[in-house]
Length: 157
Image 1 (spheres, one colour):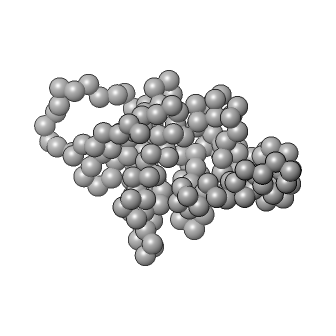
Image 2 (cartoon, rainbow, N blue to C red; image 1 turned 45 degrees about the vertical axis):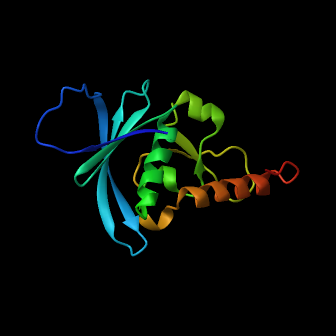
């Protein structure tokens, strides 16, 4: 995991900053239901870098693709007892390898419980989701494995 933590300061730094191509405002929710807001800043897709801007801090995550960066940001928030309310945190959202490669991890399929071919609905992993629709990383992995095993009974993981 590659992450950098920075406190917001009023002075400018000589360190070059990445050019953010998009900023997305999202909610986070804790176990008590308290909602707080964060901003996800995305770099150019070729660099796979995001920044999580929260209150008075900013943490940057770099990875192999956007999904890898999002997973790192979610881990950080989960350590603080918070869930990120985005499509990529829903228990039934996961990309195929091919979709992940073609979209640099930005899009994923919505998997349905009934047996069907590869998911037909595709979502942006950074699009907002309702707090009641998101889970932590461990629960998401368990849901994806359970869904796979249900659809492929002879080929369990």
